[in-house]
Amino acid sequence: MNQAEVTKLVSRLRIPILAKHRRLRNPEGPQGRVKKLRSIVTALLKYERIEVYHYDGDEARGYVERLISDAIRHGDTHKETMDMADFWIEEKNIVHKLFKVLVPRFQNTTVSYTRAYNAPIPHATPEKSDLSFHSVIELRGNPFPPLVQRAVDSRLHIQNVLLDEAKKEYRAQKYAEIAQDLESRANADSSAKSEELAQNNSQTPSETTTETETK
Amino acid sequence: MKLNLCCQLLKTSLGRFSTISTRQISSNIVQKQNDIFNKEFKRQQNAVGRIEKINVTYKGLPEDAELIMNKNLSTPYNCAQHMSEMLCDRSVLALIDGVKLWDMHRPLESDCELQLLHFYDSDPYHSNRTFWRSCSIMLGSVLSNAFKDNVEVQLHSFPSPNVKSGSFVYDVQLSGVDNWKPTSAELRVLSAEMVKLAYEAVPFERLSISQDLAEALFEHNKYKLEQIPSIVQQSIDGKVIVYRIKDHIDISRGPMMSNTNHLGRCTIAAVSFRFFLSPPSCLLSSNATTCCHSLSIYIYVDYVIVSHS
Image (cartoon, rainbow over all chains, first blue to last red; front, side, top):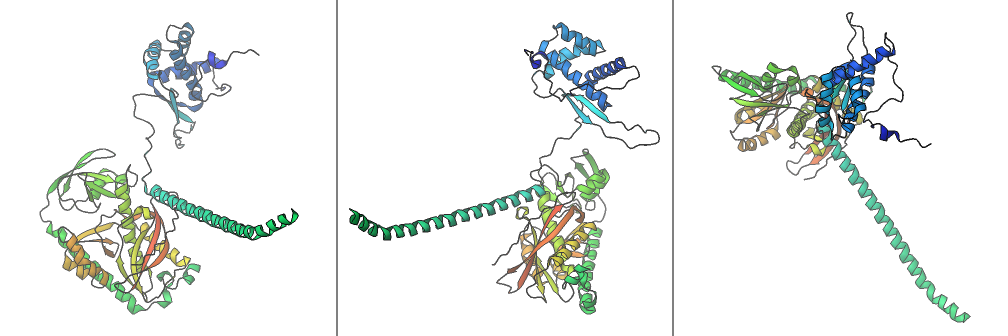
């Protein structure tokens, strides 16, 4: 009860985060794991696009997102944020980059600060049999050429032109059917009504006569 | 086997019904046409004389390039060969100086700026139209070859390409059969012939010829003979443009796509009869639906056009 809302204490990240941290195996134990993550965080902030083992990279990505998010939220005068940056970033000039370059860059964005792509898995060769799952992680707005091509507008490709026309024809056919259906119904209704009217007309004189008789 | 039994008119099932004399006649006509075509082609090549160089500026992927090519000999396809195999495979049409549509296998005539168009451009309007036109002419080729020799096939013409109609069309006259209602097996055989032609990956060869030569080329076809004078009138230089796919030769203003292998899957969906007042004959028009190469879905748009004029 009376728990503080977590979202107000910690920035809500714009990437999916696992409920539990990954147990990344490292010969140096948990400390080695943190060391590894720190080096990835530093590299990502420094080079803006890196290729790493998928699981390490995905784990480190969350810390980068959190660092940038906190830096935007609290600025460089906030002690806790500064301590965090100091801990996660190994090269101290990158701390300056975080506050002076990345904060202005990401201040007004509504999407995540980083992007991750699956790297291609190479064929196994006798020289290289390590086929681990790699991914490429990058900061948005980096100066490198884009990794994925911008989607081409395919509306005018021949298959879509054909499909559009087929759809149009199908729709026209359906509308025609509906219109015909309504018309036939309306006709049936009107004919039924006229029949009723005719019946009423024939019945009314007799009714009146009966009424008069009862009176 | 089943297909073969069903098809009473088409060659695929033919074998025992063929009469050698008529077959020889049709192959003689084709041979003669091709001889004329080859001779004229050679004459035009020799007429180029001393080879001059032209500068071709290529704009587009993978990178802009400056090429020095042979005047009246080198084609846009040759330019593509200098740059990338990808360009050779996918280019449908060339655009000269940003305005003129040019066949891939038509020699360049002067210094120019070259762009290569394909089906997945942001606006593939011209590629699509060219594709449709080329499919019509391929359909004509299939129809003129597919029937048994007791059926005489006279190609008439095909309408200007309209992709939105969902079908490409070729009008042919069949004599020797009345009121042919093709079975589904027969349509499938025609479709298979079309796909075979696509698989053969034959280039579309273009040649601009004089009226006399065109009349000599199509002397066996009364419809084409009738059309030639008006075509000559409409053209600027008084020439008739003919295209050759494998050994089939047809008239068209063009431009055509570079190769038959741009056609992926295709089915001939319907055959309809058109009745014309003059000449008083029954023309058959075949409609086909199709998709271009490297397309993973198959479009069935079953249009049947029957027009009475």
